[in-house]
Length: 165
View 1 (cartoon, rainbow, N blue to C red):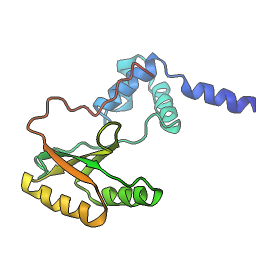
View 2 (view 1 turned 120 degrees about the vertical axis):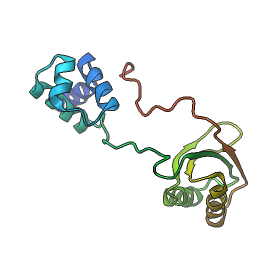
View 3 (view 1 turned 60 degrees about the vertical axis):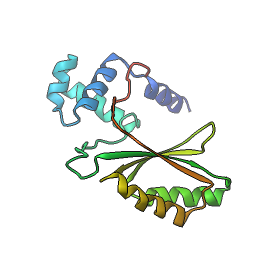
View 4 (view 1 turned 180 degrees about the vertical axis):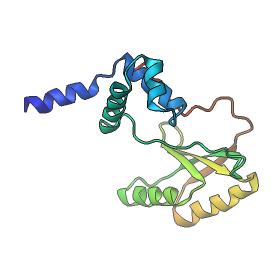
C-alpha cells in the first residue's frame, strides 16, 4: 500500500528539468534526446529516463506531426455552435459517434452558457460547410446550429504551458 501511495506522489512531481524537456518536445518532438539533454544540462541517459517516465505516467500522451492545412487542402476554419434539447445518454453517445465519424471536425467542446457544444471544423472552402451541416442534421437531432467562419487566425498553439505543472 505504501509503495502505491509513494508511486502516485512521485508521479505528480514535475520539476524544472521535466518542464524544460516538455517545452522542448512540444516545440519539436523529433529533437534527438542528446540535444534535449544538452539543452537542459542532463546526461542523455537521465534525459531519456525522464522522457520514458513522463510517457509512462501519461504526461506525454502521444507524439504527432503537425501538417500544413493549406497543403492538405483544408485551409478554411468554421466554428459550429450547437444547441440541443436532448441530454440523454443515448443522444450523447450518438452525438459522440457522429462527430468522431466526420474527419473535418477536429475539436468538440461541451460548453456552459447559451450553447451546448462548439465544433471546430477544417474545410477546403466555405461551400463545403453545407456537406458537414447535412451530415450532422441527418444523423442527429439538434435544436439549433449556427456557423461562424474564421476570417483570420491570430494565435494557434499546440503547446500547453508547462509552468503550472
